[in-house]
Every structure is written in structure tokens, then in C-alpha cells.
Image (cartoon, rainbow, N blue to C red; front, side, top):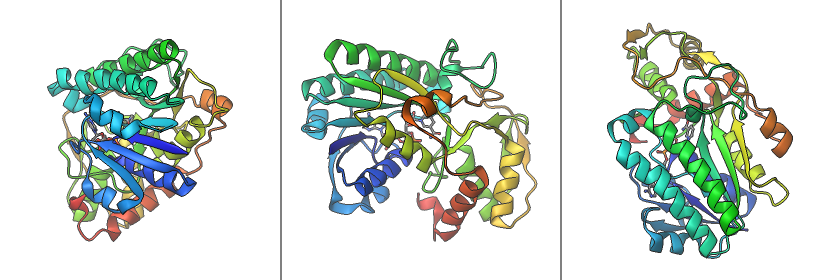
Length: 315
Ligand SMILES: NC(=O)c1ccc[n+]([C@@H]2O[C@H](COP(=O)([O-])OP(=O)(O)OC[C@H]3O[C@@H](n4cnc5c(N)ncnc54)[C@H](O)[C@@H]3O)[C@@H](O)[C@H]2O)c1
């Protein structure tokens, strides 16, 4: 089938593109390379059709989605920290951009849009694990934008006859996540520090915990969600179903790297929540989703990937 991936040069988008090509799909990518990396797409070469442009530009979207059956909508400003500095821009890309993607889907008779939602919609969860039935209460502009985007996704989908699925990813990790960006996620930051012999900074308390999910499991969830037999209008958590503290995470990285480091305890980051973990039963029942990669194995593979890179900072 012919499919489009918005944000296909991003960390998750690139893995998804690779998974879709492996499934035999024809893949079109739209990306403005604001955080996406050309080096990632160079690896798939001329096997994709690339539109270099913004999802805020209808003509670029028309070019990217024409003839597609499914759109995987990954493009976003994907950082809580950046959303606090740039809330208007976050709203523009994440909310208006999603509206544009849905309108383009309707214009081109796209069957389904699968959206990259986020655990950030839960804010500070009143109880754990987070369930989709809980009242969302995001505490960052990023979380608000992802929640608003979800609502627009489903509302425009119903109004214009486009099927929709929102996958609320928890903390995604794996090979190729950029450790060099100003808003790098914790696993590439810790891994780069451990491999470079630097002391990683743990912001806030070491017991801060997250539900970490390997990117291959996120790709698998997207493939399941794109099937014609999967329910439309669904919103579900995509996670491992268990949580690890930052201290446990650093220990796992050190053990995979065969090194010992003493972290520096830094100040808490604004917008950070203390604990997060998901109930994944909705995704299991509705999509047949199951996280297949155990945490320790995922960390070992990820650290091995960074070790193999001659210049990890190049990502
Ligand atoms: N990484 C995670 O742990 C995580 C967790 C929850 C949700 N998500 C969501 O998953 C998606 C992918 O996240 P990621 O970690 O791969 O981030 P990323 O920053 O690596 O990827 C985002 C991609 O979108 C592109 N992009 C941004 N604005 C654009 C625009 N206006 N037009 C076209 N392209 C644009 C960027 O260039 C980049 O390639 C995002 O929607 C994010 O909110 C990620």
C-alpha cells in the first residue's frame, strides 16, 4: 500500500519508514528538517518519495499524501522543554499542523490517519498506571497541544469520513535518537555521557520514573493500527506497562556499556512529572499489541548501537 509519514526524518519517523519499507509499502515522507536529520533518510536512499516542506503548507502536504491510503502523522515539536520556551510555535505545528494533515487526508480520500499522541496528555497522573479513561490534565504546552491535536484528529475524522487512531506513546528509546540536540531525551543523553566518560546529570530526584518503550515496539503498534480491521476512533497507550527510575535506567546503561559512573544530581526541570506508567490493556485488546522487547535487551541493543557509531554526536 502507499503510505505517507509526516516527520519521517525524525527519530521515530525514520524507524517507522524503515518498518513500512520492510512491509513492502510505498513510502512518501514530508519533513521540514527542523529536528529531523538528512543522514537518517540517506540510509533509505531513493526508496522513498521525499517532500521537503512543512505540514503547515497545504501544497507540500498535497504532494506528499496524494494517492496514499494511510498517513502516519509523526511530525511535531516533540519536546516538553521547548514547548515551555515556544508555546505558540508548539501550538502552531502540533495543533494547526494536525488540522492541516486531517484536511489534506480528507482532500485526498486517505482511509486512515494514525497519530503520534503522547503520555504528556495525562499531566501529573492522579493514579498509576495511566488509563485512557482517566481525565487528561496536561501540565505543559506540549501536553496541551497533543491533547488538542487528538481531539481535532477524531473530530475532523468523523466530520470528513477519515478513520483515525491516536497512539499515546510513553518514553520511546532506541538506536538513532539524537544525543546532541538541546532537548535530547534522557537515554541518548545518559548513553553519550557514559560512553564519553562524562558524569550524566540526573535532573530532580533519582527516583523519577518513566515507562520506557523500545522504538521497534512503537513501529509494530503503528503497523497494527494502520490495518483496515483495526477499530477507528481509538485512543490508546503504547508503552511497556512497567516503569523504571532514572537510577535504574543509568545502572542498566552502565551495565550494558561495561562502565561505572557517578551521576551529578541537578535541579528538577520545569514541566517534568515525577512518575509515569501505562496500562496497555486497551492497545492489547483493540490492536493485539504487546511490547516484545524487554527493557534490558532494548537498552543493551541501544548502547551497542551508540558504541558502533564512529561519531555518535553526528546523529
Ligand atoms: N520520542 C518520544 O519519546 C515520544 C513520546 C511521545 C510522543 N512522541 C511523538 O512522536 C512523534 C515523533 O517524535 P520524535 O521523538 O521522533 O521527535 P523528532 O523531533 O525526532 O521528530 C519530529 C520530526 O518532525 C519534523 N517536523 C517538525 N515540525 C515539522 C513541520 N512543521 N513540518 C514537517 N515536519 C516537521 C522534524 O523535522 C522531525 O523530523 C512526535 O509527534 C512526538 O510528539 C514522541
